[in-house]
Image 1 (spheres, rainbow, N blue to C red):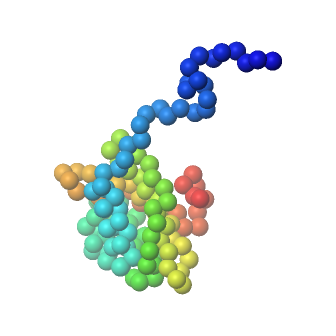
Image 2 (spheres, rainbow, N blue to C red):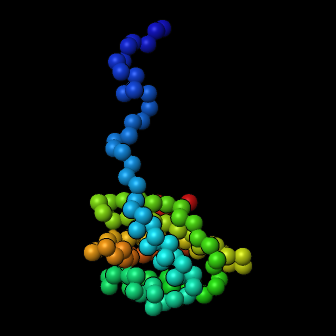
Image 3 (cartoon, one colour):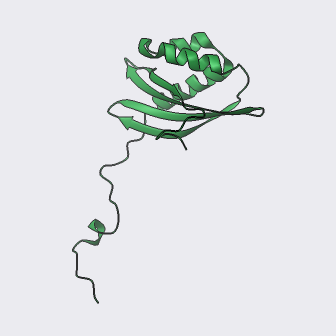
Length: 130
């Protein structure tokens, strides 16, 4: 049996993108990398300076769980955007340490990117868990 003509093939051959993918600003990615390096160094004052008031308690708990020098690399394993806020999921790894997974939201005010929310996903199951 022959399939009927469905018109423009580009419209019927699988999922179509709704909009163009927006690449994140380089400054946001630089802020995320700086935050993760600051966490791995154990620089709690640096972490606090990069965190908005509403997320300081959560970031403080996360910073306390990461011992300085325990982790030596990180990988960004997830990324999402809602309006002008970016959600990132990162995994910290070290030679003698179990992986540490964190999700955080960055927002920008007057050219400065700060953490607005943070969640330790280590050993947790969620929509962001891989």
